[in-house]
Amino acid sequence: MDLYKVSPGPESFLPPAAAKMGNVLPDPGQGHIGGTIVPEEEAMEMAARKFLEGKVPTIFPGPLVLWHWNEKAAKKAKAIRALADAGPFRLIPMADYRPKYPKINPEVEINPNHPNLTIWHNEIDVCIFVGVHCHQANLSLKIIRGGTDCYTMAMCAQAGHEDACLSFRDATVEKIERLTWWVNKLKAEGVKSQAKEFTQFKHIPKWREAEGN
Amino acid sequence: MSAEKIKICEDLYDIMPPEYQDIVENATYGKEGRGWKDIGESKELIEQHSLCAGCPESIAFRYILASLPAPEDTVFVGSTGCTSLVFPMVAVHNIHSLFGNQNAIATGLKRALMVRHPDKVKDVVVLAGDGATVDIGLDMTMQSWFRQEKFTTICFDNELYANTGGQESGLMQKGFVSKMAPVGKLFDKVRLPEIAREAGCHYVVMMTSSKPNRVEKAIRNAVHVAREIGPTYIQIYTPCILEIGKQSMEGLDEMKDSEGIGGRFTYKEYVTDAAAALIKEMDDAEKAAKKAAREKAKAAAKA
Image (cartoon, rainbow over all chains, first blue to last red; front, side):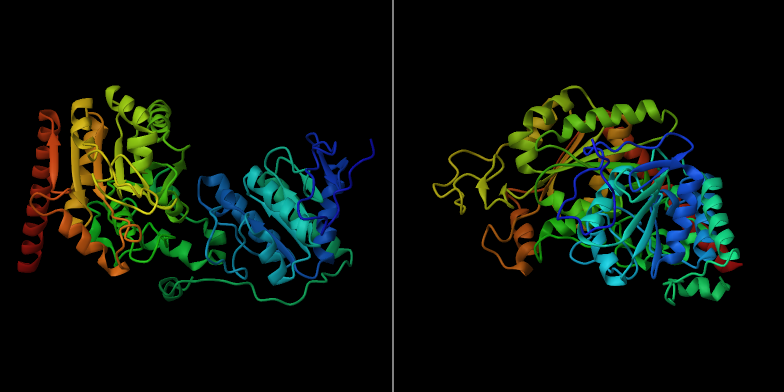
């Protein structure tokens, strides 16, 4: 059976699940690019390159890294911030998974039930999911591939995502830092970020401003 | 879950939408003596609701969420109905069950939480409509009471199936004609509070949500009695103003009219001796704490 190529959409209203098409998840130490299993370092380099090539490269941190469940989550949040600063890349949070009706503000958040709204509104062409529970990430990745031309990547703490255009697995703090290292390495080699200028949305409450934070 | 875990990672704090920052900083998780008076001052645990304008269920929801002794350690189990439309907007853990299964789900959940967290108190609260509690789920509801499962069951009684067009429910009053029950109800409203008492509930209340103080006290008592002793049941009249032909501002009047002497929802309370002793103990402790706080404030003023 030919390999099903997981490339950017728009593929169809509902793209087929890559697993159903015969794609398999990477083993430890591996990643996948478009469905093809590759060594993890190759996937990392490609991810960094895609991010630097993107016009609106965006990181979508999910609840597992946004909320202070434990010290590991806090360390991952720190590593993600460093990755965002290395680009710089935009950060748009996925704080929870509830269907936010009647409205969602696509400039400041992404929702797994309507991720395409955030992609369209901000014209995001490359994105990476990190800290999103697997089932919600799969849902979002498929919707994004279904209706947009965004290149999707998934930094998964479990076994990876076959529905992303690129994915690697077992994302520890060290692996997030490794991706940052790859971004910095490529930049040092002369690869320039193609990102449009942007202002990261920040919400600092007045009481925090008063404290000087 | 605990109040400590409802915190945002410091490095990503500034990118979080303001409503999340607000709920972390200004909600009443972990606050002693939280209650309905926090509504309007603190960040509420219900962000918005998808109910009809003026729906009494929405205010009952607010009072209940404001009255939970420990929302960060509480899990709601809901069922299909108007209430299930609100749960996605609520900042308390919740599970949606198949229609009528809510008390069976809550049983398993409570037992699992007791095994998983033996050193912590985890409250389970069932909140469902009258269709789920009295008609389709009556078996599961009563079996959980027979088994003395330690959780609270709250029934939002609007006396019909509201979001499917007004079909007759077991809690509908006799003779009532609704859009989808044109002949009128032929038999009496099921007396679930009495059934609950006989089935083994230790604290049973029937009331409306017109008086926030009363709702707060009933919820607090019910949750504590369920923690320590056994099952508790609260039935709250939350009239469906659309299905009974009222305007959005008439919900409160409808509740007040129905709770007068001889009304369908005259306040009713059944308490076992064990539950009464526990409630007295809690009340005494609360009074003592208030007295101590007053004396401390006086002493501070003098100094």
